[in-house]
Image (cartoon, rainbow, N blue to C red):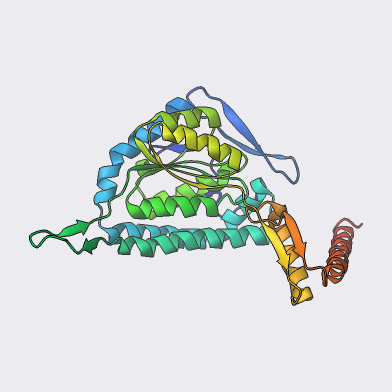
Length: 330
């Protein structure tokens, strides 16, 4: 993998402010899905290291939440600028471990950065509310407080954007975060935490733990120090994690499997509908939470839609075949 900034590629986890290996020395090998070549390895952390990350985050929480909102916002804006400035390297890391086209990977990096920028601005606007009181001698004031340590588990299909959407929100609100990325795509997460620390996020405020999902999950759900849990993934797994989170009454945010019909009405622009269907069905090789899983087409335009859709698919296959032939020629 050719990078302008090779120091963005890490084969160690980031726990409580330190790059480290697993206590037992075990590693997980990461494979390029396009070539099946070995990219590198990351530590196979377990319950012990996850507990250390949680404890460090809980200890760092009072100081982080006490920082003025402007300071947290400035740090997040610095993180945003670092992501933008290294977008090409981040995209190459993402493509190498995840498999999506490089142009799409770069688009995701910019999308991921936009979450950091958004929450940097929102950090300045964490306002309270004054509620009219029914009593003449009383005033009701609602103030917002950070909830505490946030644990996040993110998927492999958008390994950058799903991290910043969760972590940037937590940091903006004054919450430390312990992140477990998908086992297939850890290097993007490790590059992002590297840039976050360079931007000024204290190391013990943001940890990235790689390794055994069962052991890491056990530590997260058993700990009363983790007060908020966020997960993006399948509905069956989300249901199971929801049950585990209930044991310690954690607040939970779940983004689970969707149900995405593509509807073509009788008065639709069929050319536009076909292009939209291709994008909705095949973006990221069909691995998105809103990827089309069924088509509902009005009977009056059904045959025309199917005919044009099939023709467009055939044209794309031909173009791909010609491109492959030109790149593999003598």
